[in-house]
Image (cartoon, rainbow, N blue to C red; front, side, top):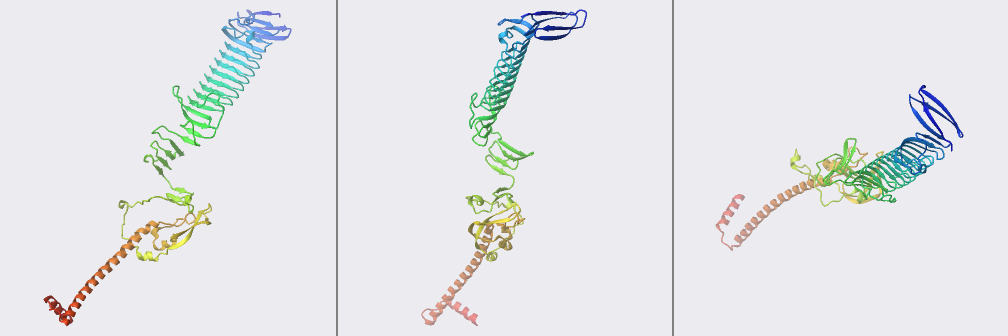
Length: 487
């Protein structure tokens, strides 16, 4: 193969134009030359070499700065070699491109290595760019940055510092020492994050991997891990499993949402804008509807009305008007009502008594379930009812309104009664009856005493008449007194 050596030396003209004809065609070289600049170009039918008169031999150690294009291999190399054989003919990948310091490209079909100590070993569009970045995969494997590595087929990609993408079908590692080593698009983004499972994503910093490298997907496999650890202690802030369970502070959530906080730390807060609507405190207390931090340990505080089966409750706790035990009924061993005299004023004797009770109409009835529709229509169930005894609230209201809860809007709520409030009326009625009984008892006792005295006197008179006994002085005095009263 013929060679042509051309020395370009321009001492008189600032610009030189040289045209070289070859067997394979024409090459036009335009060189902008400063004074005393000398360049050497080696031309062959299948080779353009700049900076040397010959390519390195296979295995030859080279210390040099040069570049060349090998037409047979459709390969380009340029830059600097130091004690290296990276650019010898047996290290040229077909249709490859390498430029920089100590770069090596043995891959073919578009393999590229740029930078310092970068290496591309693989096929079909692989790329290594940066410092000490390495690619040993196929079909779009990419490593960009410092000391990044991409191994696998189907687009594994490592970007950043010390990142590794290992696996097939698109694993991606981005950041600082991030590692993605699972097939089917495992992704690791962050600082020291590791995505081990298939189709797993790890974000944040130094996460607990939970599974081994390239673990096959299952229902309890992690698909998202957010790490919050450090180099010495790997940990996770949040985990989402394939079955949809979400764990905050939990690596293996067994429920749709599982939250685990550190001992003594608040576990959960939900806000609407800036207003706290739900909070679980570190002492295991819960505040609902507000941010009440004064709840006793283990207790629950509700800020607003609670409707159970009721969409618009009008009371602090309201159940639906339903005859179904699990919907409209409550049960307890006891129920206490506040009755502290310190919070009462305008205290006066109760005016209701037995007369009001006598005016009430106790009845038996069928109590039907009901509900108010969105248009405020009251719908009464004909099928769902129970036989009960009691009173009609509207009737009681006319006699003792304090016992009845009259709704502010009858299109939204039902009339109701507090049957416990009958207790003071009953007590007052019993007291009044007891007073009557006591008065009558005293009257009866007095009558009995009078009757007893009269009987004694009658017996005495009978004895006198019969002449059987001497009249005692006391009896004489009594008789005299009796005679005096009759005169």
